[in-house]
Length: 429
Image (cartoon, rainbow, N blue to C red):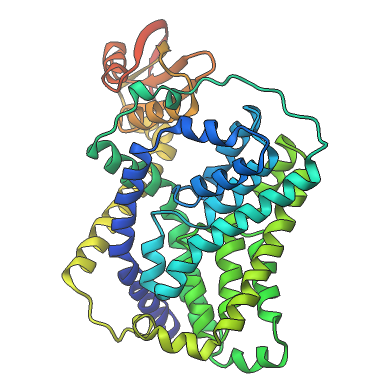
């Protein structure tokens, strides 16, 4: 019972300390997304030059995308003819940091890490891109593909405060909250199980903790924000600042699924160079951090953050308010996710007649459109099955609602919707 109590205390203290900065981070990430034209990325990254590598890193650092979120964009850039160096620069710099987690980094790791993370992401992105260009300059150029995306039409992009908040606290939060909870839980577990005197062990084997952190980070997926509490606990348990840097770089930037995807969609050579450049860059910056700071001196600078994890700080009203809002969002999205999974089974206990409808949806030109429609439909409890084929602009819905009501729902979020086929009706048993 004592371990369980310690786990929830550590988990709660970390969550409480991060909450206000996460709250502000989601707002700024939404504003950045709403006002940043997507076509700029294509314009500045789609050239096989060193300048495209620099631009890729410049654009990647503030973007609020994790390693999974950045992969579709990277593959899309590849299909549009972007240089492999620019793609690698973008892949390395983007997941490491963003406007959504710089403040969260400050909340737990202090000002040095908050400043260092975007700088390291920028420089490592340029390094990775330059190395990639060097080793792939004689590779055949990719075939340019004209992909249609609703995001490419800047005239239809909403640029309002509401659209910014909607992105920050729905799309981005829904993508991140699961991994953030994993990161907080893992940090709380490590705080309990790791001994406090690991620094004595690592003094005998300098640099061993960085290689250990790298070995853990490469296959594991953890978002840039979720890695922050883990890095804090490792520092408090005796790992060097360099090991924390390695974790914060390699953890968000790589994972097994992403490596396999890049190998299949671009090339095995590209995926290999991608991993190697991240490893070299993270170890280099880790050694630099250790030359500048010792673990003891760094912990001394982090007095506020150390007090946080030991529960010695009193929280203010804004912290509690931000934590309440974020907790409410977590509960809501968990409820929505569970509801979507169990909806087909709940119909067995319903006497409402079900029907299957097929619609033609005009304006559904990309996966983001399909996701938006899917999310809206699953908000209705009487929808039990949704199948979207955005390539053919086809929507199939199994529901007890009238077909006209489904059409009206889709039209209200900005798409045309016309009934093609009405399937069979029956009463579920």
